[in-house]
Image (cartoon, rainbow, N blue to C red; front, top):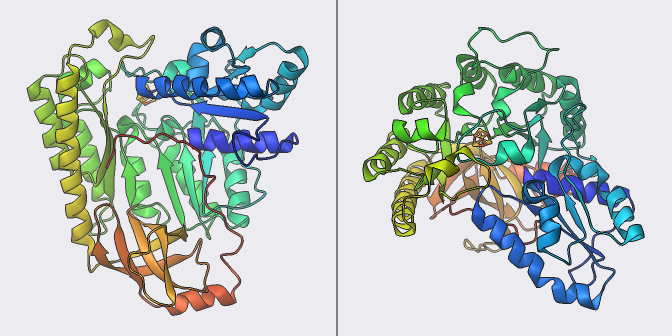
Length: 475
Ligand code: SF4
């Protein structure tokens, strides 16, 4: 979501006449887009903004802005904490960024703008000026869940849904411009509602109109290669969503389905609104929705939630094994301002959290490696995103391109030197498994020559590189 918001900020600024600077020294404006889901990210922001003080003293005209969830959470307080900050901007206020910068420049006074657009929600679409292999499309924003550890309902506001027509319009424009893969975005992307769509098939409150949205996108865009979404909430993993996975070939064979804990006691205290048994049952159905063509699942987990015992943690480990997650993001619990879990205290020691995190990551690592190894010799497709940084396979006349398989594993594919295969969907055979990626060979190398003669591959770009984006504690 933040990568998407950063792209939209860049587009809004370029639209107002700003140009991309080559580095911090030559910049007139530096914008930090922030995440506040963990305390660590917030501390990192303050440290990074602090480092800019000498630059601001040297160039008083330099504008420094903080956007995103820390901005929303802290508002004016951030201006008080960091004297050399010029602008604090909430996630819903991105369209106002150029005008607010003008105000700051004219008035010389720092501003904070953190209003939610509750009445008339705005969803910034990609400009479509140049296509990327993968494009993000927002379908909803905010969250009505109240997971007790989570600050997102505070920083992103209540759920608001984009109109299906608007989503179809953006996806259609992106696909026409050459985008191969669409990633639908929302805090609980699978809770989608639109009064213009037929009601869900059953009156189960967990059913939503998200499966219908997926079907409409697939039907309207036959040339779209892949459709993915993030992040879903497990309670909306309903029979109609599983049926959509069974029916729609364009849906990736991989879903990221956050579980957070394997213990019912902890899930209840997290207010996740499902049990371990319900999660397992739904995920099993999803994994088997396409029969032998198994769908893989990755997840998010928190260790050291208040009151988490050794037994609770053991249940998390056993759930990870039972599902067979192919990858996972695991984090130590940290208290966030205004969240319900604050009143539960923070009684798991830092040493216990570290130990549990290491055990979980070690298990994830061994499951991930075993999964990659099991793929050697199988066939799949890889959507190539651009040249690989690795030249591990070093074969004369060939270079490596990096992409993702239909199950989202990273794969490196040998491509003839003179071919830019960016955006090509290549049927491959997996020839080797590395620690976190695969090596693959095209089943029919003539596909690259056809790609060249059709003149494809020159117009697509990779996603906007993010300077200093923070990494999760994940393999
Ligand atoms: S569903 Fe996700 S975004 Fe919403 S409160 Fe829970 S963890 Fe946060």
